[in-house]
Image 1 (cartoon, rainbow, N blue to C red):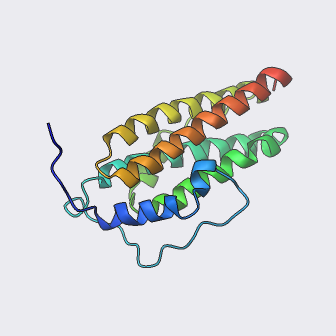
Image 2: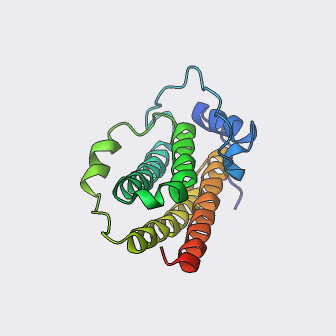
Length: 175
């Protein structure tokens, strides 16, 4: 069954340009700043059918970032190990923009306490990164916009990589 042809939304074009502009996100290097997106404002549900998906992806990224922040605050010995992970989530949120107004309050209610033992806390971050990779993979498949799907798939790859790297380091060091 052929897919109906649609013009991409403004958000899809901006997201596509952002992801293509440097593939900074795909490689998730943390040594550069993301470009500013002038004139980008939060679209409405009617104007962009992917808005709900963008909001969900942003809420997932926000939750993962907050877990990393809380873990680093509770366990100073994990700060350096989690620094890149935090930067990746921050850059992902910058790419997603301000579409998810209102998810901040909802996500805070879902936050759980950080484990008292550093090894357990790191294992929780690893598990969260792996869950995030699965959620982003599913979201990428749901996206109506090709550029958005590629961007979210890149985020899924970054989360999977962080889960793998942090998991390997935790296995080797026991923390």
